[in-house]
Amino acid sequence: MNEILEPGVIVRHPGAPEWGEGQVQSRIGDRITVNFADAGKQVIDGKRVQLEIVRFNEM
Image (cartoon, rainbow, N blue to C red; front, top):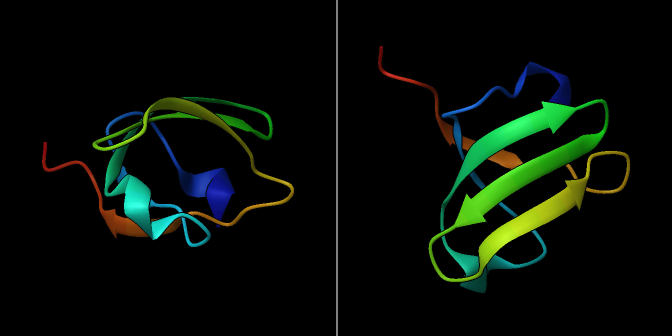
């Protein structure tokens, strides 16, 4: 499901719920950069982690 992520989508990391919600900043291949409320900017390996979508852009 990571392949549908785009900048602005709000996600959660299933293995790190303490990070809170995060906003996708970019996705280049399997590298997803997310700015999490309680963990700051993190680069996620999309091959290893399936981020949980909270909501899509409301544009």
